[in-house]
Structures are given as C-alpha cells and as structure tokens.
Image 1 (tube, rainbow, N blue to C red):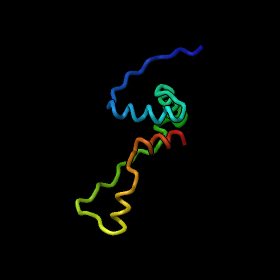
Image 2: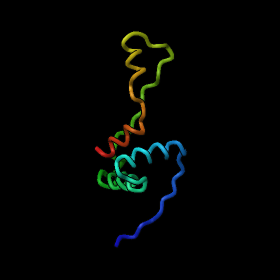
Image 3: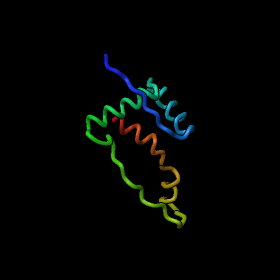
Image 4: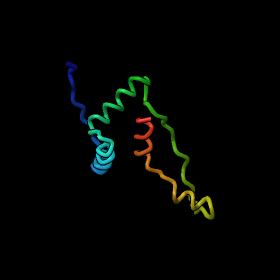
Length: 87
C-alpha cells in the first residue's frame, strides 16, 4: 500500500468553496482533484497547463460589438484552469 502525506495550502475560503462545488459535481473531492493536478504535473514534468499573462484592460470604455463581446466573455480563470487540467 502506498503511503500518503498531508499538504497544507492557504487559499481564499470562497475560492475553496467554489472549487469544492465544481469538484463535487464531477464526483471528486478536493483531495482527489489536487491529486489529479499533481499526477499531471509529474506526467508533463511541469505545470500541466499554459501559464500566461492576460493583456491589460484598456481604460477607454469599449463600444459596439467589441464592448458587447468584452462584457459577455468568461474570465473565470479558475474554471478555465480546471478544464485544462482535466483535458
């Protein structure tokens, strides 16, 4: 039997609750989801998703089609990251 170890991580309480809700819908515990991440990190020998800086937002209000698109885009990077890890 493999031995296990504990990992203590400080995160925002709301972020943890949101993540646990998503993982629960997927049938995973937070511990299982972290294990998925760690196994993928080992498999890929690095962070198992792309890390990049987002373009800075402009100070000028957007109008027309560009403004509508900016208001409806999903910027929830936590969900994006989780989808990429599950990839």
